Length: 195
View 1 (spheres, rainbow, N blue to C red):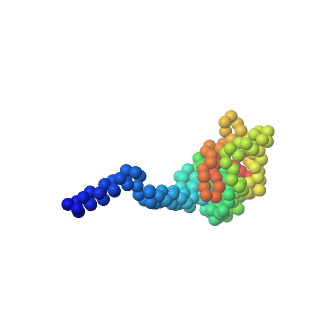
View 2: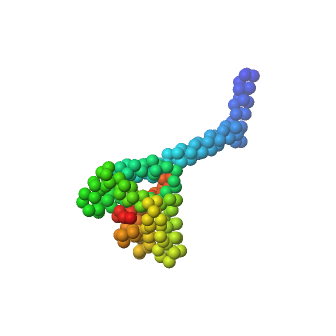
View 3: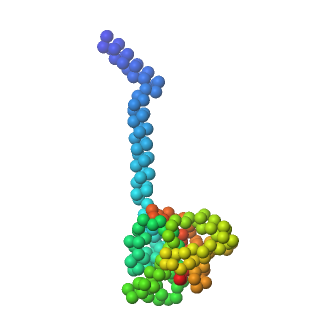
């Protein structure tokens, strides 16, 4: 009988502790585990964000660009620390070039020309769409951008679109913005710009 009474008291104490929010150490442990898990997830997300080349390689719309970057030997550069802003021509943009142009540029003897064209699409620093639009607005509707290649692009706004005008007067429309990479940002464009 004493054992039964003692068991009943112990069981009652357990329920009383649980009803009053008992086992605070366990809840604290769960909170700490959740915080550690959240921090780990954040760190993993940062570590898993690919570079500009990785982002482009994971999107089939940039397969021509990725092939060109490889042929020009720019993979290591665009995998570097940066930050870079890349105005990335889509496959459709490359398809607008005269027939045979892309194949010719991918040949080893065209590496210098290809490198010049590709680096004309790259700007040192990270400039998101809002930064570009603000720069255009702050400069009376046109903002000159110096590319890694050394020549300039002019950014302006036509309607609701940001337009890039190249050194030869050719125009390209920014069709997708702020694609994040670990070493910068990508804005997709619909036409290859030429230095």
